[in-house]
Length: 478
Ligand code: FAD
Ligand code: AMP
Image 1 (cartoon, protein in one colour):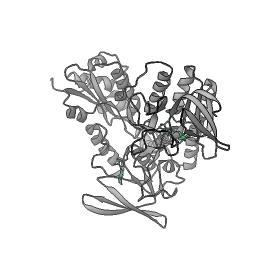
Image 2 (cartoon, rainbow, N blue to C red):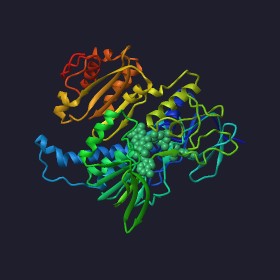
Image 3 (cartoon, rainbow, N blue to C red):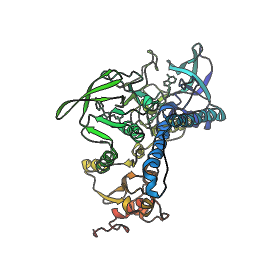
Image 4 (tube, rainbow, N blue to C red):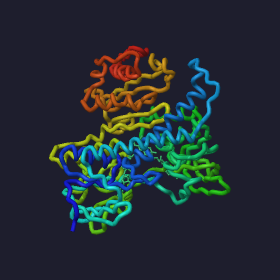
């Protein structure tokens, strides 16, 4: 017999699950959110991977390490002389932990204020919309709901040739909590996570080597942007080896020896620490009772339709556990959509307009189509580019690396993609997302007044360049 009855039970309080629960409560649904995450001190900490060991701690360390590098190397160019700049890694990590706990406890506060029952422990989907809830220190109990949302998130991939030992070979969580700067840091995988973590530790003094199996750097980004990024990261001192497939690792005497293969043959390289950042897999083990017939793919991802409905009526799945990019805001938007649909609204989500960001310096951000995708689809397009080197604000900020690129349909002028590499690209991309959400043309942006001097002016200039008439860069008339 089931205990308490809810309109909605959400399993998982990451950015997908907790946002779904908050929106559902706002819409008047009686809602519970089950989550098992506990911080290193054992305290329940909602917010999932994103708040605890993902987006937030990585951005905290990226910020701190950028300030350190600025103080140590760049301030003198501004006429600011620091007599000595020392690294206090312990204090840096403590600040990161405070940022994380403020935000996780903030989610707990939001649950309380909005009337969501936050249930701390494990959840498991049973048949007939029932959920088994096992509190951290208690016995399993059965709850029932009219609707269930599964939002269990994902976990790092562990590969057989590089098992995690928590000290020398670690996942991204381990690399966010090193107690000392490794002299030689190896990273398997030059994806978004590998590049962000590599940037943090390079800035703090590590010699960083990234081993990437693919020949193409940042294959999902626009190729022009990826080319520029590879050049800048290499100049900064990141040793990025492409076409390098790692096949073996051995830990001996505190050193990790890594064997990899590239076009020229077999190689070996030694590190003090190795981060394995080769992707993440849905965390669906033990989530669904055997009696529930739920369709999953070979990676364990729960099969859903465009509205995140699973193969079991009334049960939805969102976030990293389903198809689509593993991004916090993608999961949150799915959570909002599902909560609203349960409440009878006709909510939808345009997956084409989900922005992507890499928080390196320069940052990289994009939304919509890349130039390569438009070419492959045979879509006629025009491209407009504006380099930050020609922006007054970027000059004043000493942030002249990078550009804004806008791709628009050659006939309708509708914006099909925007790509930014440069300072604050993560913020600038929002202009492209808003414009594209309103079906804007590059002319719409060109007709808009932007404050001067701002980095945003580069967005308008790129739009003007699509139209063949940029003002602050000399181009031959088209
Ligand atoms: P999660 O955040 O993984 O949350 C799932 C929650 O469910 C967890 O708390 C888990 O403990 C709980 N859970 C799972 N199963 C059960 C169960 N059976 N019972 C109870 N609880 C359960 N994305 C971005 O958009 N921007 C970034 O800058 C960014 N940076 C990242 C940096 C790093 C280092 C990493 C690792 C990831 C980063 N991501 C980033 C990805 C982002 O963290 C994920 O896309 C996001 O957290 C997915 O949200 P989710 O709610 O689906 O799952
Ligand atoms: P992402 O999927 O963005 O997290 O990036 C993971 C990266 O790891 C991808 O670019 C993969 O090509 C890369 N990768 C996976 N396996 C290996 C391997 N054995 N050696 C080197 N790189 C790998």
